[in-house]
Length: 51
Image (cartoon, rainbow, N blue to C red):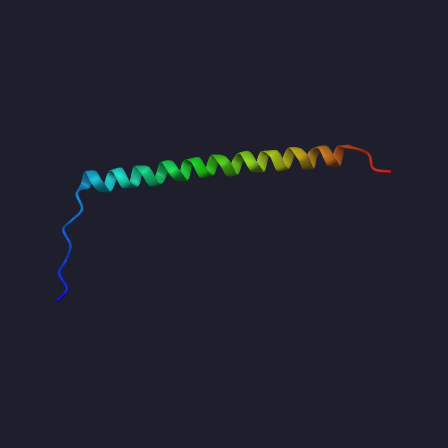
């Protein structure tokens, strides 16, 4: 028969949430860095005259 699991404590929930948010923050910073590199490379290709 199915038995409900024990309730997760507030502190454990907060630790997990903080960890998830920290990982999301790191990934967002990586994405921004990639976007900046791409924009800079596009800017350089547009400014160079093509023959």
